[in-house]
Amino acid sequence: MKTLVEAYQEFDVEQAIQNHLVGTPQAINAYVECCERYLGQNKTALFWEGKQGESQHWSFEQLAEASGKLAKYFLQLGIKAGDCVAGLLPRTPELLITVLATWRIGAIYQPLFTAFESKAIEHRIQVANTQLIVTNSEQRMKLNQIQIPHILTVHSGESCVKTDSDFWQELDAHPTECTPVLRDFDDDFLMMFTSGTTGLAKSVPVPLRAILAFKGYMTHAVDLRDEDSFWNLADPGWAYGLYYGITGPLSLGHSIIMDERSFNVDQAIAVIKKHKVSNLTGSPTAFRMFFGFKEKFDASIKQHLRAVSSAGEPLTPEVIHWFNHDLDVNIYDQYGQTELGMVIANHHALEHPKKVGSAGFAIPGHRFAVLNEQHQEVAIGEVGTLAIDCSQSPLFWFKGYEGHNRKSFVGQYYLTGDTVQLNELGGIDFVGRADDVITTSGYRVGPFDVESTLLECEEVLESAVIGKPDPERTEIVKAFVVLKPQYQASENLNQKLQQYVRSRLSKHAYPKEIEFVESLPKTSSGKIQRNLLKQQEIALQQIQKAG
Image (cartoon, rainbow, N blue to C red):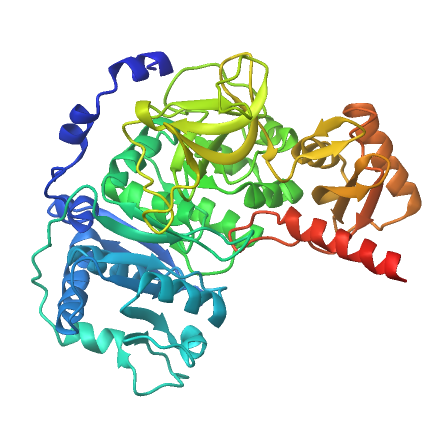
């Protein structure tokens, strides 16, 4: 196996372009890179599992034919290169056809997560000046009060808007031939939005050059091989699912799995077994759920599961240990953002030191730095803000919010807003979002450390930790805990958890307050919204003072 150091030394962006893309920086098309180049190879592109138990296989040829017809329809509407086309669809073949057809005419695909309601949708399409939304009957009512030039609906029996054009009727009415429109490396092909946890969601246009970075993550970090059965659990309504559940694997000519059903552990296990999944990626939320019901995983999965990758939040040590010792597979932490794609990883395909709890090292083509408050790079062992050194990151592609807002840039650095420690190996240990870190009695406590320790307790299914304002200590550590169904909240359990964290972590980091809750607030992509919990505590304190 090649070492990470060797991969750094060998990396050359011009060589990568020649080796991995059909197009050139001046003439490239995402549909060509993700579909057309693989025609004639008799490859399956999509394995689809429907919510009614049905299954379909789609070849690259079938997707080329369907996307050509839909692309012709788009052109008939007057949609052109550079326009935004949005998909408000579940994980279905129609979603993938929409993505490929959009790219085919040089337009920009905009994902709309199906859990969004009208206000979130309206904000995103107004900012992006979206020209068309492709949706289905179930989602269509969300668009009733929204001004949008065109709507195309995948109709079902209970369709409520008969005046909409019908997806499959329009495909049947158009020819398959549609010449791909070539674009420039710096032209956009995706229109993403931040999750909007601290204000209105900001747009993140993604240029075509990002495809090269996506390939690097899939090959170096995920170690996607031709013989793998690959499944990304993340929804393509969000960055990780769209970048690495659709674009990345298809750009390598690899098949993908899409399961229309909402995530649950039993269904996920069934898909893993049916398709003999060997390479699995997803969010820590999903993997924590797997761990919470680990008794459901039998020995047969060990025979084919080879590599597991996690992105979104740091993994907890007990989840890593369970995958390693019970399922005999390595699950590795990897780090990225909507604005960056994945840039730091423990690499499955490259040899380097692996440290539990670390996000790892820069993916070839990137360089990170840890900066102090003066934006100077810190020494080993110090804590600071994680940044990407744009001057030494040829695969870096983020242009700024809305394509021009560069408030997150300082000099040659892009500031991620995440607080990390530069560890003894030269890698990254995650501490928390800058606004999540707790200051208590002069100590800085990362919420992840406390959450991770709580999850070691057999009673705990999920946990979230915040700093609750306190006049004497600045903040105290407060934990919100979701128990497994078979356990009940009690004062004895409260004390047991407090004592466990105190003995395992430190006397200043244990939660002085624990609140047992039925669920935790999360973003639509599954990340815990600690800021909402903190706002809730502040509001409660204000009410108590006023009373």
